[in-house]
Amino acid sequence: MRFVLYTHSLVSDWNHGNAHFLRGVLRELQARGHPTLALEPADSWSRSNLLAAQGCAAAARFTADFPELTSLTYDASFDHEAALDDADVVLVHEWTDPALVARLGAMRRAGADFTLLFHDTHHRGVSDRQAIDAMALDGYDAVLAFGESLRERYLLQGWGRHVFTWHEAADVRLFRPPAAECARTGLIWIGNWGDGERERELQEFLIEPARTLDLPGVVHGVRYPAHALQALATTSLAYGGWIANADAPAAFARHRMTVHVPRRPYVEALPGIPTIRVFEVLACGIPLVSAPWNDNEQLFAPGRDFLSVRDGAGMTAQLRALDNDAAMRAEIARNGRAAILARHTCAHRVDELLHILAARGSTRVMRQVVQLEAVP
Image 1 (cartoon, rainbow, N blue to C red):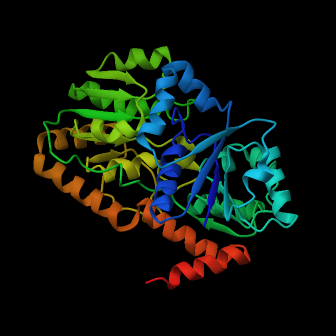
Image 2: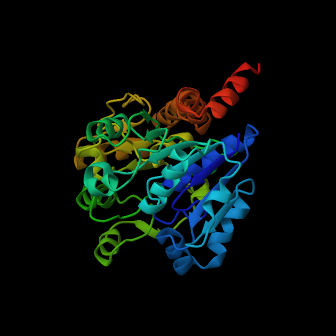
């Protein structure tokens, strides 16, 4: 089957974590023999910021790191109908312009025989409901929501008749422990400062523990305001700026531990949804200590796959324990990676996607899925 993905950007992961999972899914589809194509707007804010901050070489990294993937840009003159002429499955991410979302839905209603899916991996369903209200999803065969709480929100608001939970996951072709261990030291955190959605949490669960313990290490990410950089400067953590996601596994491999600080909308309104970085961190075999979040879907086993704390004092205590106990670090890292390999790889999500297509796909797609399942 031929899969076409509409995404905010596949080439750029500048403040755009959705690119991580989507790259992994397309790579898995390609590995199984399904041709893929990504379409992204030429003027996306992620791509524009990446080029402005890092230059053309940063965008060129995409081709070098993911040579099997193809992403084309489109503008107002792009012929979407021609691009989708031989598509079997069209997956439309929720950052896509509402007018284009509606145009694709109209194509499906008019008789296009591809399967049309809407994919939501953000919190706008609770933080900006008008944005999702503006999406014309009546022509879509199904909605894929990246957590059960978001799926329930879609059903409650009537945004989709057929809504499935489809969590993000780790691309374990990329995210894995190093082939050979080297000396590890201190703490790493890779994450963007954001829009005030976790400012006080970053102070409590990252900056203050690092300062108290005088932990060496590094913080990577973008959109750090001056006061955030000033706060980091009071610790022994260096600020490393943007890092390409393909470089994250090697960065994790140089450090003893990391932390998870979820954004407030996920904690308060969309429980059960971890960020993509949780999956990637655990896949890399580095111990993770998490600020509070409610894993009500039981994706992981807190205390076994990662450590969970209630407050900054608890974070400080757990980071101190990990820093001083190599056996403890090894056990948490081993358990976390085992959880990923058992349930949360992009291969698992492609399997789930095929099951969804078997239930909600067009006649042509359902027939192809049955043929795939018949192959031993």
